[in-house]
Amino acid sequence: METKNCQICGNNDWMPLPDPNKNQSVTTASRVLREPLGKSQCNHCGFVQRTRIEFLGLTDYYEQDYATYYDRPGTDLFHKKRYAAIIDWMTSYLDPKSKFPKQIDIGCGQGWAMERMREIYPDAVLEGVEPSHYNVRVAVEKGFTIHEGKIEEANLQAGSYDLVFSNNVIQHVNDARDFLQQLKKLVSEDGVIAITCPDGSRPNIEILWGDQNFSFLPENLIGLAKQIGFNTVFWACSGDSPSLPPAQLLILTNNKLYDQLSFNPQDAHVDLTDIYRKRHEYLSSFEHISKHLLANIPEGSRVINFGASYWTSVLAAYCPEYWDKVAFCLVDTDAGNSMFMGKQVLEMQAVTPDNTDTIVIGTGPGWQQQLKDKLSDTWHNVVLWDDLLRY
Image (tube, rainbow, N blue to C red; front, top):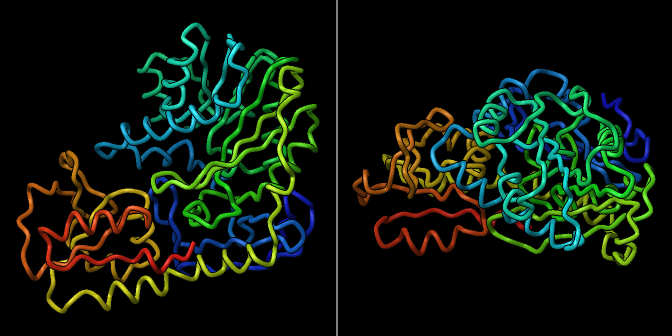
């Protein structure tokens, strides 16, 4: 029974969303949870919350288990590029004359965003907050000062940071309003808070993760920010990219330099009936994807999954009958001696194609047709599933 109140509007009127798999879900660290996704949409404000399952943040998941995904070869380079793109987007809205002499990254991971910020603001003092023991160690090795723990545990000096930024963290926390209040405590009188997170108005991979407790519509994020009080509450959304999920940016400040920032509230409006339908269809798609993959694997075929990343972990968790048939994962980068979700990871040059092989594209839908064109020169049976995710 759903008893949790909506963290945006306080109501307890939930519209259940489908579980992609009734027995399990998966986290962004590729950990399979033996429990369904358990998410619902608020009937009043459209906010999505994990209502039927406890939040992983109430366990030691972030301290102990969150970094396992990043052990794989090539992920550091991937995330460095990914977070550099996020930071370039974020800083494009910041005052170019501001040097932000003291900055802090909340939920800094292994320091990918901080590496880019160090290039943009070479004279700034950069600090981070991160709960994962493993991530802290890696970030410290890169030369950063990291406060280990969650923000409420970090014992940081109030009002001492000119820029407080946080990328893809707010959807993971236990209490979104308290998280924003904690950021507000840290920022100086004329300082700036900059937050990015997935855009919940466009169904995408972010809603599939069991460790992401919330999916924010733009109006949810803006409304929550306005509740904690800033003169400037600026919102922007990113464009569509096959390599990055749709994102939204929030800038909060009392600095008059940002008075010129404005946005059209209509740009942030989402029809709640329409978004519920889209989310329902998106989450229901994996039953069809599973059937499609199984139907396109000939009897006796060796099954190879191309990819060993986010989307592969989604297939592994939500299409387990398909995953049971996979012999190994194939990548076009250095694989080292690695495993991914119980499957060996091999490099393309180490595998000799056979006409009876089936290779399934286990990457994001936006890349699948391009990869099929590339792989079809060598592999006889290449299977896509991008047309089964409608959004």
